[in-house]
Structures are given as structure tokens and as C-alpha cells.
Image (tube, rainbow, N blue to C red; front, side, top):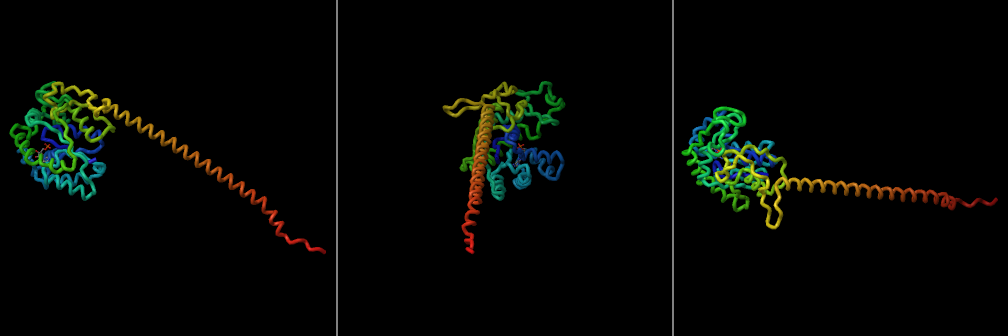
Length: 324
Ligand code: AMP
């Protein structure tokens, strides 16, 4: 499956991409993470994009398109991938279409995370992360237990991303509405866009996304880690607690089933299917054997009959003894 996660900065794309990556077994391709790695490692590309990213502007289409073209050609992307933060402009979307078409592939779904701008601003400005393990916090809704210290690994000195200030967030939001939002016109007419309410707790967003993707059977459910500040919703003051796993809304007229129950049902169905297949195979095998045995028996009988007829006919052909 080739999926695009679509939404404003801070809508929770990264958090959902990580969960979907585990559940669907396909890699998350985040252009933001790739570019930040270049900056961290001081590569030529990193030096080129550092100032642009700090200002909250978009890196040139050429750079990100090249980066993605290289990445999707890697063997781990053969079974599909999840794009997080790409495409971000219509030319990037068109370039992606061309790249995929060259391989005879298409985008299967675009999952849009819908979050109002004021929530995005709050989430991003108060976002802090651990420089060592990457755990994400929200200063007021999801603060670390000990100030400025990571709950998960104990590292002191949580960091704020250089582009997470109010001024930069405003610039990023403006870019999103002007350059990224029009991408809906590219994918909408193909019926690919499925919008999820990004204000719900992360677990609910995840399950809605799975449902919209038509994925009932989970390969492996991701561990319910602390919900990240990126997706902590102001409507849910209990964002620390994992949401109950009964959040899947059932289709009208059908009983509600959890994702867990769906996975169990799918497992049972597979088991029954396997058993039926094995039974059928045994039956076919037995029938073939019986048929073969009958054939052999018949052939032996015919052979025997022929053998018993032979001497008689040979005798019949004998010339009558000459009379002396
Ligand atoms: P993100 O982590 O996705 O919010 O991206 C962080 C920054 O990386 C953005 O503000 C841009 O400067 C840059 N960036 C990431 N993805 C793209 C993209 N597809 N096109 C242009 N710039 C990007």
C-alpha cells in the first residue's frame, strides 16, 4: 500500500505514521526527518537547507523530489510506504505521480488529518522533545514528571525545534494553506482522500485511519506509548491515558467490534479456511488414490483375461495334424 499522510504541521502526521508503519509493515518516509538528519550530519545538502528550514520556509521541490525518488527505489519500499510531509506542493505531487507511473504504481490512499490552526499553534509552540530518545512532550498538557527531564530515558534538557516558535509556525501554516492544501485537488477527484478528525485522541485517530484504509487485521499493534504532545488534544485533558480500545464505530445496523475483536475474527476465519482447504486436499488425494487403484485393478484383470485367451487362439491357429 502506498499512502500519503496529509495535514498541517503539528496535525499528528508523525505520530500516526509511526503507528501505521508498525501496523501495516511499511516504512514511514518523512522528508522533514531526512532533511533534519542532513542538517545534523553537516552534509552539503544539510548546510544548504538549514537556514530555509529554520525560517519555516519550504525547501526547493527539486531537492525533496530527488530525495524521495532515491528513497522509494530502496528494497524496503517494494511493498509500499507511508509518505509523511511529502508531497507538500502540487509540483511535488505531480512529480510523485510520474515517479510511480514509471514503475507502474499509483498512490492508494491519502489520509488527511484535520486540525484547526489555533490547535496547531498551541501544539507546536509548546512542543518539546528529548534529544536522545525522541520522546515528545507538551509543556502544559503533557509535561515531563520532572521539569526539563525526559521521563523515558532521564536525559536533561528537553529541546524545542528551531522552527517551532510562534513566528515560524505562522509562516509554516501560511505555506500549508497556500501551497500544500491545493494538493486535495490532485487526489480528491480520484476518490483517494479520506479525512480523519485529528482532534481526537491519538488511539482514535489511528483506529479511524485503519478503518478508512480498510485494514481490519493488524499485523502487530504498536505499543501504546505516551501520546505525543504533537497529537495531545486540548479537548482531551486525559491525553496521558491510552484511549479505550472500543473506539471503533460499527457500520449502521452492525454490532460494535473493537479492532482487537476484528483481528481475532480475521484470525479465526483464516484458521477455518486453512482447515477446509486441508480437508478438501485430503479428500481429493483419497479420491485420486481410489481411482488409480480401480484403474490398476481393471488393467490387471484385463491383462489376466487376455493371457488366458492367448493359448486358446494359438491352438486354434495350429495347422491340423497331417494324416499319415
Ligand atoms: P516537517 O518535519 O515535515 O514539519 O518538516 C520540517 C521542515 O522541513 C519544513 O518546514 C520544510 O522546511 C522542510 N520540508 C519537509 N518536507 C518538505 C517538502 N516536502 N517540501 C519542502 N520542504 C520540506
